[in-house]
Image 1 (spheres, rainbow, N blue to C red):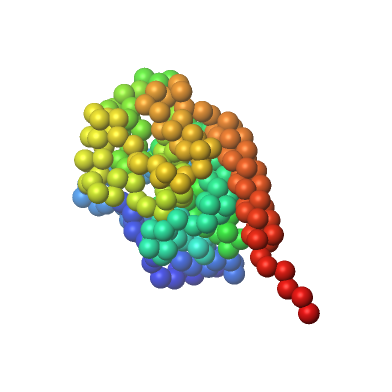
Image 2 (cartoon, rainbow, N blue to C red):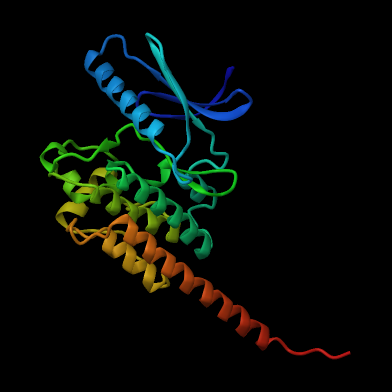
Length: 283
């Protein structure tokens, strides 16, 4: 039995509710079909069908788990697992836009990269990868969500409509040029910067100003001077203006794993230096 609880988020076509289904906590996306706007209703139906198709075909620890969907004349719904920790953006906001410890940030980034590598391996493009669409589950793992604007990769000439969110959007998408899966890699570079800094990208600009700066001034978020070189290199490669230069997510995973190994070794060395610096005590 499905029990509808309180709403906790709102999107373009409806609201997200917390609820239970057969005793399991679930997130319920309720979509209300516009009665007097056929064009908007058609777009909503297209996105509903796309999201259900994709979610039902994805099985990965770092992709939100699909539970079910129903379609009635005026109200449609999609059920997925409920993420108790909210989104990564909410997590960073609760920390007052301060970054998490670097080892946690890298672990979260790896979760996202592994989930995206799986999706890209199936030929999918997310097209709206951002911290709001990354959910923190009870075991603290990160899961990719919100596939309403995701697509199956087709010939480049068929992938020109603008979609996504400007602050995370690749320049070729902003300019309505043909694009590939590499738009998700660009967005990941921005997400990695968010995880390392805790800040909102281009926070001192409006979304439109950010889009203009990215396209016309090659603007990118400023990487902090204390950011490890390995992570700075990943960001820079991911958000390169040339999609061909951007790495695949399989390569991003390998680079992050190497960065994680270096970080763990650095932490161990720091702890060792601290221990030997402490004065010895005698009875």
